[in-house]
Length: 440
Image (tube, rainbow, N blue to C red):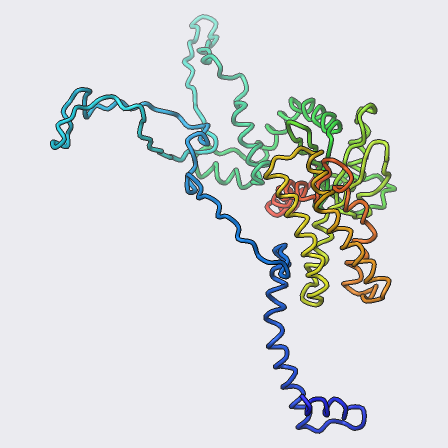
């Protein structure tokens, strides 16, 4: 250590010799080898929401799942159930084992066997209608179709199957056409589009009602993503170039409603349009999103209460944790405690009011300490304002009130993950289709 100290002091008087430089580099490498493993383990614990400074508690093991991954019979709601009588043996017959001397009797439990078979997504039946012709006027009279068949060639189940594959599974009409052709029931992409479009008029009133009902919810998550439409009909004075799909999930006490809107409007504009249908007698609706400026347009405090996503704030620190491990670890560890508290409220089945009290008791001290730490980084000029860490801190401080609504408002969520999950289906459509020609 004395030798290293003399080398450090020599740097202020003269250039270091080659031997001194090598010794300094070797010492630095040794120090890194000793410190980095411990620091990396702390960083890993922070990413998992753990605090490496706290003593680890022995957590009870969770009991093994009963089905060990197998689905119960109740999951197969579309299955045909066939009762198979036991014709190999009879009641009262001597036990086939030949050793116990017992008799066979009816057993309440039955043995189950699941048999899976494949079939085409759409099946076609060709009805050959017998025709009779008059030898006088030569008029032709055909047999009537069976009850429940016709007059439309495509049954409602066929239409719903095509629509579900397209808009539920993200399978484009062209790919469906290829699959159906291979399976012997060819339906062209244009025909698929037409029959789905014709059916749309029947469910448009249902969609309009769902939009109105969604506006009456107590909470809504919303977010948007880009969309590709080649021939989009725009106004002549429209300066906006982007096209977006907004996902809105409205939460009610007994159900949730997921809505998707595609057009030139951002998420904030679609949020505003939804709130226009809200009953004025209802209280403010909690609107959860990220803090993007486009989401925050025209906020009506009488109808909505804005909450921002903690996951977005956390993500800024996760991205730069390799550059600022100790600072980022402090923030991520604090937010990990918040999510741990929220998970406990869900496991306990707390209602919104009880959950709020729990967070105020256990999470508010953590967030208060975190806010003081963030302020100190800025006031003491410990972080470069224009650097990655400074920007991450600025995001949290600028939106602190919206990020911490769960400490003041009953039912306010921590993040916007619900809306992001809904948009994954939209992203799947975008990847599978590459682009759309028109908005319809």
